[in-house]
Image (cartoon, rainbow over all chains, first blue to last red; front, side, top):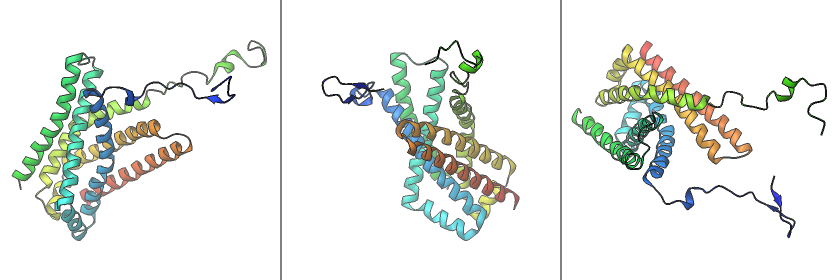
Length: 136
Length: 129
């Protein structure tokens, strides 16, 4: 219940706990936000997989529409973004398992893990795309 | 207010439903189990996609028709979409309040269920036709 202000007789809102806006941005905070954003991106990205599977289960013409899209510049850009989101989220998840096991929460290591998540996500994306172009 | 020690209600009846329902960890547990399963499944899925890159319609269908490929794909779809549904639930309850929250949660569940059905149906259709 909100308390009543004696002078004005109006309800005063309850005090709020400090939110992200008042803290200095740290690496672990940034990667926490990036984990949520990459997860939300994958939520939309699964539509590409659904489209691919439905097209492949329909007929060659429908599959051709999907192929043409995914091979276009826009399609490739979206697929590159989804690949990054997948690997960033995957490594971020492994980082959470390391924390759950009770390791990596001290000052130097937690920031190193956060940097490893950021760099590792891009490195894995570039490696997989290099393989993708090499096998064509 | 009646004296809590009087009345016709039994002591058990007075305290029932006032405490933990013992289900508070369901979502955390689901996220952990699906995350763990998704580590190998994601590697398998990326492997599949890399194989599929240079394939035409018939090649892709032949590859996805193989048992191992279909099973990895189905595992990735089911674990992934369950993970995604529970994950989005935690985002929605953080940012959406009131009646809109209930509708958003329903929409999230329906969207995820429909997506899972579509992906599983399509995968099985490729495998069996």
